[in-house]
Length: 154
Image 1 (cartoon, helix red, strand yellow):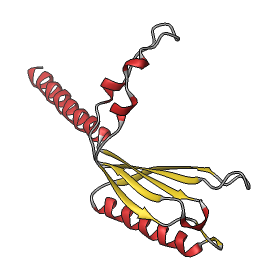
Image 2 (image 1 turned 180 degrees about the vertical axis):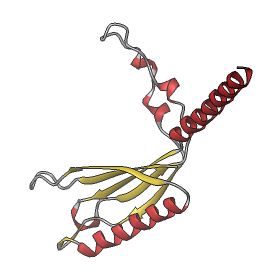
Image 3 (image 1 turned 180 degrees about the horizontal axis):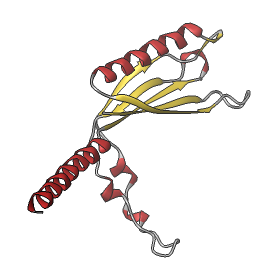
């Protein structure tokens, strides 16, 4: 009977150790890479690939609503939210003077693909990609952006 109880205790301890290791592996390290590609004609826009390099504690920027309406958001300054350190890689604009520039698009694809391979070599896995566009809407709207966010986990 003592052996059975001892074996059950050892099995439970092993199970707890495995679960703790699994839970810590699930959290992992996340990295978000944002690609902003300008669709402003004639190279006047700015296209970039951006990665944050600053650790942020969101606790100091969050507030709680007490009744759905009362908020303490005025105590959070937008200027305090800005990070000082990030990596930035130049990309080419989608449009040139003649219209859509397919060479620029292929060049951007090469840069973005190379960065994905670098991150995968560093142990990150691409988990999710989302994109959006604010596009050129006629003669009174001179351009817009195409934005892509890639979420990586290590």
